[in-house]
Length: 93
Image (cartoon, rainbow, N blue to C red):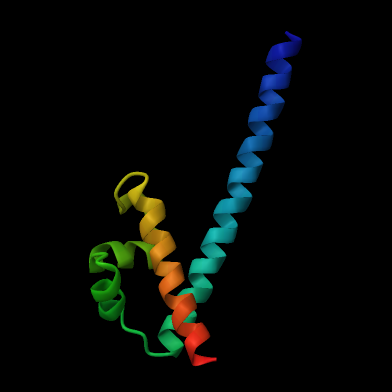
């Protein structure tokens, strides 16, 4: 009984952490998309450099992560997208 209560509380804590991480990721992608659009970075150039398909890049920007391939590809695609725009932004600064 006590063990089950502890497990339930632990599961709730993990869910809250996951939700916070998801919100942080969504905010980061939203900000990076705004940077991409404002600096005229075309999705095609990201696709050409990263070899991520246009379909997958559009899924990232529209938060349709369920349309991306499964792990570890999903994390890799999102990470490459973020790094590409962050590197471009740093070069412009």
